[in-house]
Image (cartoon, rainbow, N blue to C red; front, side):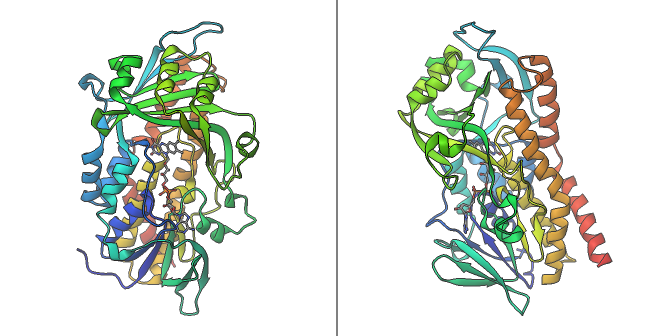
Amino acid sequence: MATQKPFEIAIVGGGITGLTLAIALHHRGIKIQIYEAAKAFGEIGAGVSFNANAVGSMKICHDEVYDAFLKVRTRNLWPKKEKVWFDYHDAFGDEGEELETSKLVYTIYSSIGQNGVHRARYLESLIHLVPDKLCHFNKRLKNIVQNDSGRSTLQFADGSTAEADAIIGCDGIKSNVRRLLHGDDHPCAQPTFSHKIAYRGVVPMAEAIKAVGEERASNACMHLGPGGHMLTFPVNHGQTLNIVAFTTKDEDWTSLTGQSSDKLTAPTKRRNAIKDFAGFSGDVQRLLKLTAEDLDIWAIFHLGDNPPPSYAKGNIAILGDAAHATSPHHGAGAGMCIEDSAVMAELLADSAVQTREDVEVVFATFSEVRKERGDGLVQSSARQGRIYEWQTEYGRDFGTQEAEIKERNARIGEVDVAKLVEEAREVLRTRLKDR
Ligand SMILES: Cc1cc2nc3c(=O)[nH]c(=O)nc-3n(C[C@H](O)[C@H](O)[C@H](O)COP(=O)(O)OP(=O)(O)OC[C@H]3O[C@@H](n4cnc5c(N)ncnc54)[C@H](O)[C@@H]3O)c2cc1C
């Protein structure tokens, strides 16, 4: 364990960002406390997949973050698909064509192939890496007050308070820290509906094989069509198949579900998912029939229309979805969260950073070096979602789709995070010298 630094950081929110950051900082001798709104850490029972940048970032955060991932990750089950990210299929065909099975149209590769994990399993392994005494539950941050001493007071919904030298908001897409940073009236206070929704399910692999055959069930697949697409990849060491079926809706979220945008899921029935994918291939239909009869619709909100003007001000910073909540069409939102944690941890651990004032320079540096990449992911992901659903100038031209997706994925997923950290450190040192 590194020598302790003389400042203390409050982390607000214990999702994948808050936990990876907490582990990374704890092992670098930085005093932290985590304040989580829920009564326990938790994740949903769906899958999440990670790109090379995410895996590189885990290693930088701490070996144990990477080891926890290795224990739960599932790759494509066929060795010859080791480097396949997704096999892309035409799941709709030409107008009026009825496809019994989706047709393979192109494959996107990645240096590490497909790496899916069951979210809840991965989070459980991370939780064990954070000492209990640093975690505080039922602590919903309401407000932050700056003290004369230069420290800040966090005020929670239960009436309690806590103090810290600096605050890092890892409180997700509906971040209150982002709202406090930029004001209630700034448009970034409220993420917007991308007009895409998702149906999600995790189904037994044996059933999935019966539905679509061994190759498509055992390896990551994307099924494309007009106004909808479905992705599948194996999780739980190949025992289950993760299914996410996206579709585009003209209505806004409230007219669609009767729910306010405070709640990002709404109950629905499997038959509605099947109806939304009418005209799609038999593969898509059969997979949807395997999902539970009672499903949730997931609203895809993002910050694409209104990115925050900065990721930090003074002694407050935002990381992860709090800073760059994205639609999931790159499969890279959580990966970017871990990348944030890696960069922030390395900057705070720099030997030149010793005081609260230095921490503020770190936060300003973080905002400078991370904003283009974070906001860029949000834009790129929205575009990728439209390509998948034939809503761009390419329509159903698979050649142009493939070329653009290949380029976008490399830009987001195939970066050398250690190099990003080095570049960030250079900016930090210049800022510390010039202040
Ligand atoms: C359908 C779908 C599929 C996805 N698939 C992928 C994928 O394959 N790959 C990928 O990389 N990403 C994927 N993502 C994106 C990924 O899920 C997110 O980017 C990531 O989970 C965000 O993590 P986070 O920790 O920043 O936020 P969250 O997971 O939202 O965690 C925020 C935490 O803060 C707490 N909190 C909130 N408000 C407060 C408060 N006021 N005070 C205290 N605590 C608070 C919450 O309770 C929560 O625990 C997907 C997203 C969706 C919707």
